[in-house]
Amino acid sequence: MSTEINGELPSLAEHPEKSAYLIYGLRFTSDRPIPGLIPIESRNAVSPDLSVRFDSGEAYRAEDPTEETLWYTSDIPDANGNPALKIWKEKKGGDYSIRYSHGLTFHLSASLTNLSIHHDEPMSAEDVADFLLGPVLGIVLRLRGVTCLHASAVSVGGKAIAFVGVEGAGKSTTAALFAQKGHAVLSDDIVALLEREDSFYVPRAYPFLNLWPRSLAMLSKSPCAEFPRSAPGEKHKLMLDGSSTRFQPNELPLGGIYLLGERSDGSDAPFIVGLTPQDALMGLVGNTYGNKLLDSFMRAKEFSLLGRLVESLPVRRVVAHDDPAYLTRLYDVISADVSA
Image (cartoon, rainbow, N blue to C red; front, side, top):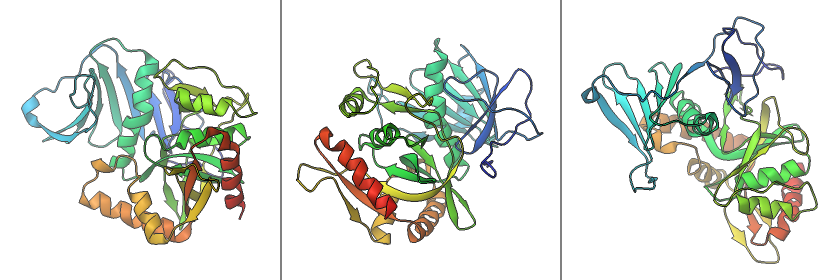
């Protein structure tokens, strides 16, 4: 796993026709530009952690399907009620085939260093990138042994603050709220945890936030920057381009974690609840990204890492208010707790 050193982006040797990127602490090259990502420059001879190759319009077919075993089946259905994702593993070589029901396949080598992309029907580069930068790289990270939280992270006082929770808990909305207030954003949906010398670090992800129209409407009611409209039922990419919101380009030490999900219409909301290390551990274990992919060894390793984390860093539970009008107060409550 490659990371940033002394706050500077590392270099990467690459072929002239390839683009190089740094995301989640992974250096990777691609034979095509990846929409939404910021390329890194090549200065030194550093091998990539992952090489990505696009084979547009070529559907992937195993040479012999009987030589594959079904390794994982998603419990999320597609429009036809079938599993939206299945992962197959070659019995002999150990390669993985990450196959979506609509025909998009990511073939990952057993060494976890080469990824080829295939699709049955024409797909835009933006649509392919949505799968690559989110769930697929999340799978690669988990297979590499990197613990990831289902979270978003922002910079507060030179440290990373993570907002953890299930789908719909308000992770991206809270991150966007902090972005409105001038804080740079490190990551959205997936927060990779890098442990070094008894400390934890959060590497940068991609320079945008994915927000539902409802979240955009809630945030637009605040006196800060206006947000663009989004088509109903579709997430909008809020670009962190520095115009009104910023992207944090370098990794930061993790300073604290806030568990989201509960809401209240009480006059005391929003408020923060302290957690014992045991309760904090259970809250994090239930909100790690891709935890259904883990075998017993990987789970034990993750449990051990999170145990060390809750003993060294504050983990709190946030009870937000039902009314979006209290978003600014939510920012004030969390900011005050971080400062304390």
